[in-house]
Length: 430
Image (tube, rainbow, N blue to C red; front, side):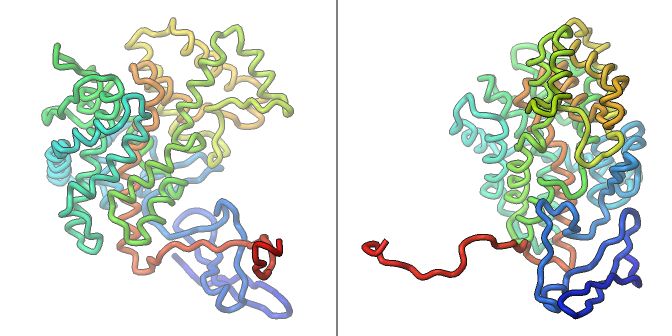
């Protein structure tokens, strides 16, 4: 970060010079770390939308240009030319691996995909109709009770072991949560399968008959993982960092991130999108719902269009649209009413003046929901799949924070607007 420029704050007759930091990319940042000590005031920024909580070298987003980079590499290039575990290596270590490094990394992940056998009994404590995300929050948080040799955050070796374990085991835990909700037996991971194929196998195979993972579906799954691997300082990532700032163990931190991701405004968006498509029901009803979406007095809003960060197009959506078209062609599910509604809505959104003028393009949640629905996943599994995709991003951000010499426990301030000081009155005087 380059320094040199300053910003001047004039307050109550005094001037305060604040350093201005210049990043590699993105807007300059006014450094207010000493503001309270020097001037005795806080800044007010609900949602922290104008506040940089950390410096980071991992992910960069330019919402106006529609850009997303992992360690400087555009997401479109990684999705087209790389694969998820290579992207995991990039996010964790900062550079793309050479062939030997990649083989070693993939081997370490593959050899850690099984979970402790006693964790099977842990699942059975949940009701069968529990949401898979509720199960994942509990089971991932409980990993610290099973893997005591990787919870010392001050030991770089233990941090590395925990990182590999989480990347390897969270897909197994997600698949187990799915199988448990169906009343089907758990399926053990297969070391000869790649990461995405292994996940699909654990979700859809049964002991009674062989299951073949279609390479096209595996590739589409891998792309979903890659496109969701990290997304800068979003709500769940910030939650992981905040939990980690207290010194909590990595499994607890990732469980906190999963809990945050569960919210419909965050990881639940693709589930909400598909539920909206089902509510519309048929192509004939689309005009009715479009009219409602354009009516300022109607609370209905179209899910899966536009993005709070990307003010242009979501760069992930272009790649996901290609995968959606490939998967729908492969599975031949074009007669599905929900998917017909999705395709027609997509066409309208790219042509309708209302959508175009407001830049309400189909986003990544719109297409990922279509793909997962076509693959056979219920909507309850959409967010768990998002969680396993994002695990590597959370871990990378957590590791970066732990190694940062400026790291301190998170402690946001507040603008207090409650009652002024008052004295307690005994009960008989109230």
